[in-house]
Length: 119
Image 1 (cartoon, rainbow, N blue to C red):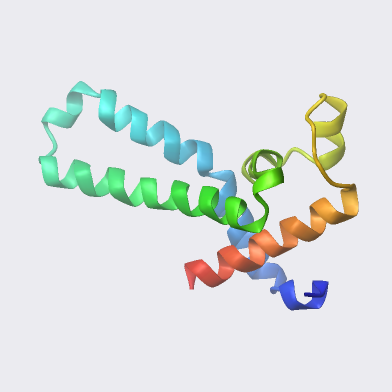
Image 2 (image 1 turned 90 degrees about the vertical axis):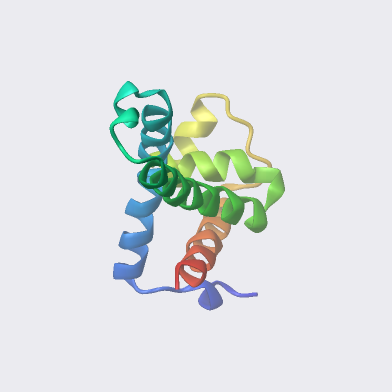
């Protein structure tokens, strides 16, 4: 596949980028709901629905990164969920099993595939 096959609009990219940047919020909110004493005040079904909704979002991001390339899953996931660049990860000693150009091509594929999944 060529890079042109993974093009999405700049607005779709922004939406997906912010969706991914909320990844840690999803995880935190799930843990808060599970560990909260106030969840006793919420009906159990509502709490379960919230957790399921947040879990699906988190898992969609993780699964998409795995589908793009299982060898660079962790650095790719870190990049799209925190905004840390390829260069910053390399400077911190994070091993990335491809070059910069290939990494960003895979990131483009990630956003394209995530856009498709989100519909």
